[in-house]
Length: 172
Image (cartoon, rainbow, N blue to C red; front, side, top):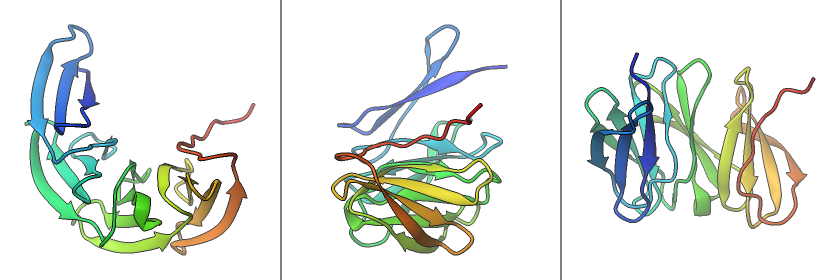
């Protein structure tokens, strides 16, 4: 089984696919500048990369290292982090300066809705059961808790100064 890691390069929009055993470059393709993150459907057949400067989400085929589709996100979006839901039916994108998280259908690539959260959502994470999304909102110094059944922010938690990322860790 081939295992690879992907590298996003901010300035030129380069994406490199590197063999995790030999460290050889297996693939190289480009997306618009400032690709901030990526995620994949659970079976690894489709990948998603947001491009902050262009306000788009790139859909790519990992088998061919080719962009299949570019989705324009809602007006004002400066996408940062992308996460695929645990059941691979939804894709979530933090929209940075827009103050929202965009929810897309993971197979038709259509925008289902946008959810208002704090100022400049950067890092996002999903609960393992797929019921909640947590968004680190830099300038508002908090984390939004989003109920994904309602597509609605249900709480904000103060979180220090300029939180960028958030992760979930099981407790013993």
